[in-house]
Length: 168
Length: 115
Image (cartoon, rainbow over all chains, first blue to last red; front, side, top):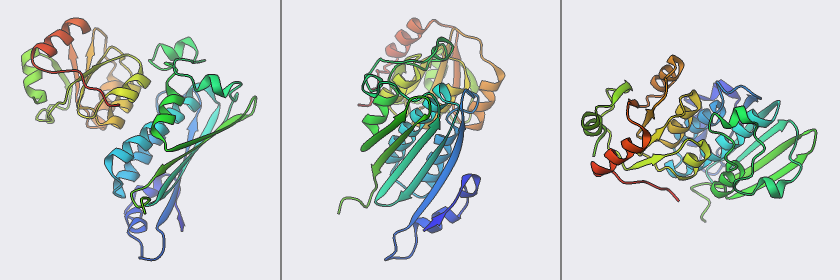
């Protein structure tokens, strides 16, 4: 298994990991940091992950689902938290994405999962965020979603997506 | 229907991507809520909005939308730069969203929805 961080993996090496030797599962990991309240580069982590997944040749519909769910999770960090990190582990059988933040946490997860419920402030809603569809969109696009949250500390999302070689 | 025929018929201003107008368009979607677009807009469709900031480009690029048409709003230079960076077609119309949608429909374009 190889671990690649940040910028480094916009290189040819990703293709190598993906097309790795038969018999050994080709896997790579990536990670991006996310700054709270910085809307000028919001979504950059999801966009980079999308490019990498395209480069390694995942099916476009799968890439779109992963990018979309990651974007929503990233924007939740930008809107609600101080900072966070996006991590992904990619193999042909499974794509795992973690989005973890230091932030206020979610007092009522069940409520937050309800479509239309949002605690986004007005200046964020004016940009077209805060429809209360972020977590529902993530649930709809990920094959599995786990939310761990501690009020006053932060939130961790864990999403998984079945890869092209998973249907064995 | 491709972008060029729509741009010419409705006299849209091409802010970026004038080399990408041969792209076929699958339909249209109107919303100012980004998550709504993420939930429902289909690849290759037109997105009509009056949200003029960089997150619109991020969403359109992420979904592989055909073009964004901005209506009834000033367009900041940073938005145009971002659209150019992402090779996204950014268009502008003087019409109100309602009239623009009517004219797009009259051209034969229909709403697109990805479920």
